[in-house]
Length: 164
Ligand SMILES: CC(C)(COP(=O)(O)OP(=O)(O)OC[C@H]1O[C@@H](n2cnc3c(N)ncnc32)[C@H](O)[C@@H]1OP(=O)(O)O)[C@@H](O)C(=O)NCCC(=O)NCCS
Image 1 (spheres, protein in one colour):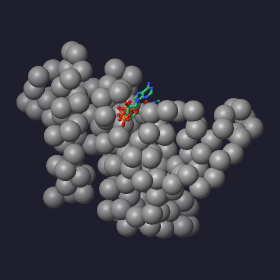
Image 2: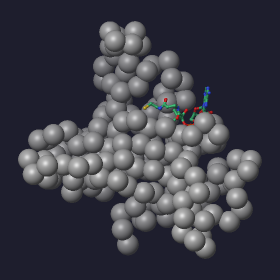
Image 3: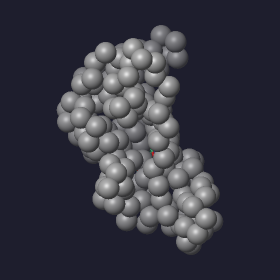
């Protein structure tokens, strides 16, 4: 069994329930996590092995196996030349599927993925006024270790870490 399958098995009932509650979602569907690795040159070959890339949660039609809808996406990026640290970034839930608990579960999935790939620590940054994201981080045990003003955007940003 692949890592993604084991993780999906653990979280699939919660995700299915949330997705079924969204109006217009087809009755028969299965959920999958797709992963597209980034192109990494020979200098960074270990990063490829460690799951660096773009992940998508997709609704699939069981009969054809075709993707019907991308529900959410996120990226896991290994810090170059530091195999212990994974950066979790660009997490997004498609607006129609928000506020159903999917963001919370996908954050747990990212932690599980990073752990299963052998990382020791994950960090992420988030705008502190992003209420849903702050709730998710708190619920999943992330620690805010630093807060700073992003001079480019004017946003106050929190740097969060979780040990694995
Ligand atoms: C942040 C985001 C991923 C959350 O996904 P989600 O599926 O809507 O989150 P959940 O449904 O799991 O909700 C998490 C918590 O936030 C709350 N929440 C959800 N939407 C909310 C809103 N608009 N305002 C206030 N609270 C909200 C939920 O009630 C839940 O709180 P609870 O645990 O106390 O019940 C999603 O809003 C998103 O894609 N935002 C745009 C991109 C982004 O900001 N990404 C994160 C930074 S990289």
